[in-house]
Every structure is written in C-alpha cells, then in structure tokens.
Length: 106
Image 1 (cartoon, rainbow, N blue to C red):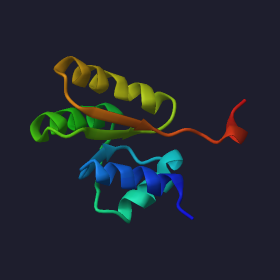
Image 2 (image 1 turned 180 degrees about the horizontal axis):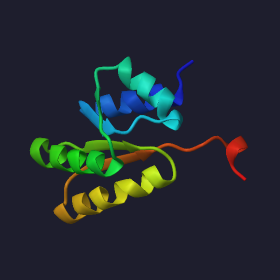
Image 3 (image 1 turned 90 degrees about the horizontal axis):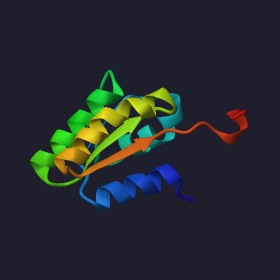
C-alpha cells in the first residue's frame, strides 16, 4: 500500500523536480522519509523564507517549478514573502506545508 507522501514524491519526480528546499519538522516527517528514498534531493535551510527564495531562484534558473516546504502554522506564513516574490517574478513555484493531525486540533 502506497502512502500519500510516497505518491506526492512520485508526482514531483514525474514533473521533473530534482531539489526540494525546506525546514524539517515533525509534521513533514513522512514526506521527508519519502524524499530520502527517492531521486529528489532535500536541501535543509534555517528559515522557511530562505527555502521559498531558493525555490524561486531555482525555478527561474531551471525553468521547472521550484519546490519549498514549510512546517505548519508560522512556518507556512514564513513562506509567504518568498512565494509572493516568485509570483511577482512569474517564477514557477510549489509551496508545501505540514498540517497537524485532526486529533491535535482544538
């Protein structure tokens, strides 16, 4: 049985994604393990904003979508500056964020 994270990574690979930039986090653990077992290279950064800017530049230089990862909540909002910049630059970019389980929501 295939996990959702394996399917997502397979789709990224099919689209030609070779690098993913992001901040590792608990909510992204399954996705990071799926990336580790694939041909995609995960490049860890210290801040989500840096991940979004790196994905933006990667998309502009390569022409394929740059992919960035952010953890849930504030990590997702930290992506926004880089995502907005990519939008204004008309750079192809995919932003993925983590989400806590339903049992953790209030």
